[in-house]
Amino acid sequence: MKAFDEIGLSSSVTKAITHMGFEETTPIQAKTIPYALEGKDIIGQAQTGTGKTAAFGIPMVEKIAPERESIKGLVVTPTRELAIQVAEELNRIGQFKGIRALPIYGGQDIDRQIRALKNRPQVIVGTPGRLMDHMRRRTVRLQDIQIVVLDEADEMLSMGFVEDIENILTEVPTDRQTLLFSATMPRSIQTLAHRFMKNPEFISMKTTEVTVPLTEQHYYEVQEKQKFDTLCRLLDIHSPELSIIFGRTKRRVDELYEALSKRGYSAEGIHGDLTQSRRDTVMRHFKEGLTDILVATDVASRGLDISNVTHVFNFDIPQDPESYVHRIGRTGRAGKEGLAITLVTPREIGHLRLIEQVTKKRVTRKPVPTLNDALEGQQKITTEKILKTIQEEDIHLYKRMAEGLLENSDSITILAAALKLLTKEPVSTPVTLTEESPLRAKQKQAPRRDRFDQPGYQRKREHKPYGRFPKR
Image (cartoon, rainbow, N blue to C red):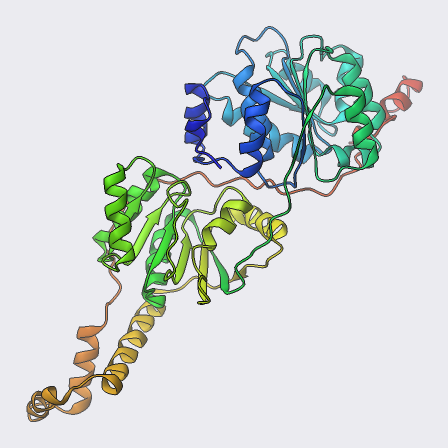
């Protein structure tokens, strides 16, 4: 995997990706983007949720000119939900270059779509049935298409769209670039590729499986503004020996470790903008136990090999399952048990479910801890330390001091005072973190056999031009 600023993208696209909070490519992106930028046709075998939208979206936005003369890019998807999601992501990638994508799908008023098409988007994201409808009406013309993407092609073929897809590909110029993505590679996909693609590069991504059996996985559903207080309470409850906290961006890492330091935690941050000497210093402090908490981005965590990390905290949920597995793999190493905790906002629950689907591992939901829970956690840790000291340390020299204290106070009062003195009580020093936009789930939707997107629907309607229009 590479950092996005290492793959030669334009400043406008790089700025958009940074603004989206992405720093490192997913495996499918690392393999696909260079080939796509070279203009090669690609067949990508990848599951939903592996980052394939950006894998074709980034080169599409990079290669298309911002002039609004005609439609230059076309993405065909099996469902309306996926069309909307893809269009939204393309618009975020193209926000600083001026590239606009418009979703068109069955079930939405076609006149509304026709009005939107008059704004001349450079990219259309459509379901096959509605796209064919616009082609027949001549409201969508494909004669200037440079890049075509078939997303979840196996789903489209299983839904009976093979004839529509063939008609669509026949209408676009033969010198186009074609990218096809599919979770499976049945013979029908191979036939389609052989007929409409030119010497395609084949890229296959295997389904990720969690390989950290000694790591227990929990998640807490919290609002963005509650995440930092929740993190502090969890640190107080668990009191990890060494822990890594992952943030989505460099800014997030800087703000997090500074905020933790304000509240009395021993923390340092590491990300791609640090000099090598500073990185070495931070890592030395962490490995030697001079720092308890390392706050890091995904990019900075590459190559970390620390065997004593007891806890991993995903302050921000990672963008893809591969990053999630990479993060939680920092604990539960060398035969030791570990705990991975992820903080998820309500709008990101779908993204977590997708990670569970791809990694084939259930993440256990836990109730959000309260201030009392944090205090009780610290009290328990203090009690355990006292009992351990009684068992393992020579306390003979301190007994005379204890006897002197007992002359003025009872034993329970003295012990309570000692517990209070030794217990790290929760600190509520106010801190401000810049809010990060939640990740949108790329969750795979069940195919909707909407009559507006079914092959033949328009043809049936044309046979009855004066018939009553079906209810929507």
